Figure (cartoon, rainbow, N blue to C red):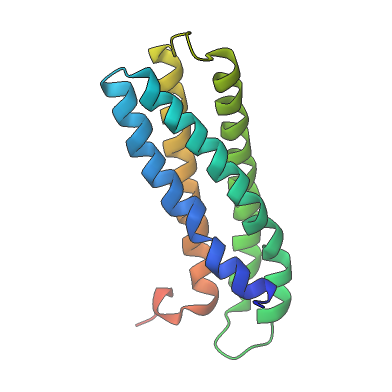
Length: 149
């Protein structure tokens, strides 16, 4: 059975890669103005939002496993933790907006282009935040990411 640190490392790629994939799915749906594809993107956003919960929840427990270990740059843990909190909240806000869209624009109702574009812009911002959160997390134990030559 994996410990919290292992679980965190396994799961933390989903919000990063998942939001990037959904940017393309939702973006395509917006560009071709296809409600089915926009709805798929909206469902995927909610799914990624749900996956983000265990990633976030295992973070604090993972910290306990890595502190004091050789090769761990503890000075980066706090930065990662603080930005992860912001990124998590942003992901959940976008997920709630997406879920609201799923409910409001049920089958038979058109998903307005403005809603798809708004969601896409928010999702791109969240994806950038998730990438940066991952970068900060990587600096904790990946010495090659530290700008030391």
